[in-house]
Length: 595
Picture 1 (cartoon, helix red, strand yellow):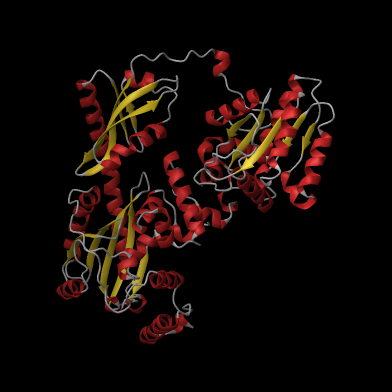
Picture 2: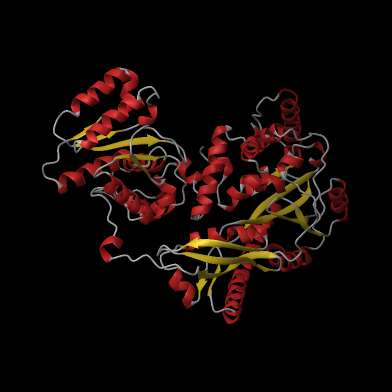
C-alpha cells in the first residue's frame, strides 16, 4: 500500500501517523521500522515534538583525527558539486556538529534557524529522530525524510547520516550527514553520503600509519631519556625496550593497556604498582600520549621496587595442566584448577562463580583425578541442593549423611547457595566429619561477578572462584572443538563467537554449538549457521579484558531495565551518552543486542 502512494499521499499518511503516535502513543504501522523505533525512543526520553533546543558545547577539538581526515575530502567534493542544493555536516561520536560545508544559501538559513550549527548536539534524546543522532543510535546509515522527523521544525529536510568508523579498530569517530530540502525521491544524497564517508575512512586509515610513526617517535625519545623499562602502548601496538620486555614476560598487552587506562582517562601522570609474572611488584609511571589533541596511546616507565626477590619457580611447578576431560589452557583457569586440586586433599572446597562457568564439571574432573591417584578411592556422589526444595531439607541432608557412611570417595554438592541458613550449620558438621574420614568434598556456589559470603559456617573451607568465559576467551576455540567433536565449526564462525561477551558462560556456548550442529547436520557449520540474533549481537572486533568487563556490567544494567538505556545509565551512575559511547567503542549494535 505505502509503496504505491504518491509523494504527497505518503507525506499526508506520515503526518497522520505522527500525530496519532504523539497523541495516543499507538505504535506506528505505516512508517519504516527504524523510524518507528526512533519515535518510541524519543517519546521515552520526553523529547519536545514541536521545537528543538539542542545542547551547545563549543569546546571543540579542531585538530581531531576525524576533522583532519574529512576536511580535504569534503573541500574537494563541495568544490566539484557546486550549488547542488545540499549541505555536508560532520559530527563527533556524540552527534555534536564540528563542521559544515555549505553552498546553498536557503539551506544555510534554514539550518541556522534550527540550530544545526557548529557546537550543537543533535543526539536523538535532545532533538528527536534526525540523520545525525539516529545514525549514532543505529550504528549504520540513517535516512530521515520530511515527516519522518520526530520534531516538527525538522520536517522540511531530508537528512542522510553515515557513521564514520576507524577502518582498523572499528571505533566510531563521528557521523557524516548530507542534508537537502525534503525530497524522498532524491536517492543521490544517500549514495553521495555513503561514498564520501568511505573516502573519509580511507583517509583515517592513512592517518593511522602516521599515528604509528608518532608512537615510535615517542618510544625512541623516552628510551633515550631513561634507563628504566619503557613501554609505549596503544589499542593495537605494544613497544618495549629490553628492560621492560624482561619484566613484562608473561604479562598480556590488554593487562598493560588496562593498567595505563587511568592515566589516559585522567589526562595526567599516574604512579602505580603492577604485579609481574615472577611475583614482584613493579613501580610504574604512566602518561597519555596525544597527537593533535587526541589520545593515541600511553607511555609507561617501569622498574621493580627495591628489596624484592623474584619467586623461584621450578619447571614442575611452572607447568600447569588442567584436569583430564576439561578444555582450556588459560593460565588463570589452570591456576584455579590447581588450587582446587591441592585443597581437596584435606579441606572442603567451595567452587564459586557465575552461572554456567563449569563448577560441576570441575568437581567431577577433580574426582577423576583423585580416583586415578588413589586406586582405592571410592565412588563419586552428586547431591544437588536444588533437590532439597522438592524433598525437603531435612530429608535431603539425611540422604547425604547416609551415603557418606560408605567407603570414602568424592562428594559433590551443586547449588549450596539454595540452602537455607538454618540448614547450613548442620551441613557444615556433616562435611567436616566426612573430610576427616578421607572424603573429598566439593560444594558449588552460584553468585554474580563477586562474592565474599560464607556458605558453610564453622567449617574450614577453601573458596576457589571459577573465572567467567569472558575472562578466558582464548579458551573458546578449544571449548568449541570439544563440544562439536567429532565435527568442527568453520574458523570464521569461531572468530565471530570470540567477539561475544557470553553472559551465560560455558553453558551458553555449549547450547549455541549444539544449535549450530543441529542447524547444519551435514558439512561444517559456518557463520551463516550462527543464529541471526547472535550475529547481530556480536561486536565488530575483539574486546580487551577491560572492555569485556565494562560491557558485561552495562549489559547487566540494560537487562535489569528492560533495555532502557536512560534507566541503565542512571543505575550505573553515568550519562546515557557515556553508556552509548562505551558500547559503541566496543562495536556493539544496541538495537540488535540480546539482553
